[in-house]
Image 1 (cartoon, one colour):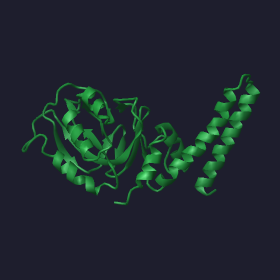
Image 2 (cartoon, one colour):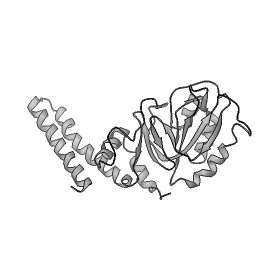
Image 3 (cartoon, one colour):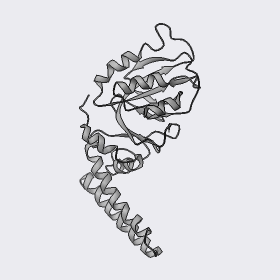
Image 4 (cartoon, one colour):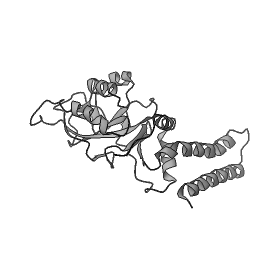
Length: 242
């Protein structure tokens, strides 16, 4: 697995919201614009939290029936052992295989454990519980809802491709998430994304600054919008080497 970004670059990515990250990634035309981000089934449990950035440690999960052998929580140690195979700080990502979801993927103890060992947050296609306690930890979580009980929770597989929020997540994928949703960032451009986000913000400020003026006109708005669009189009061509 390729080496991850430096802590400084990861910190830069946390300065931007996920829509700005998505806007930046689009400019390279590396993937269709309707791919690479999770759908609305995955929502931030704590919308006020700042952006979460990290590398996917993937797992599959069930809770509708007991595991065939072993302790229900026994695989958490195996997850922690797998942290070293991830190119940077992990985000724990679960695909809940039960349909419908039977019970919560995580609670306070699991999230406390993950955070203590360096995880940046958690995403599950299932549900969570102990949300007040997890919020108190300052640990970002993204789910499809909440269920009070843990059922027969157990982890099936670790560091395998999984499907969450309508997209495939591979072990080591770089993830960015906040109240707007979760997106992946292609590794080949990840180090350049923060500066591109800054350039996009400067371009969008042309429109926003115009709209803050005491008097505005449609013609003035159209001119500001064109100037912004021209700046972003020029940026995209430069990134694509056109």
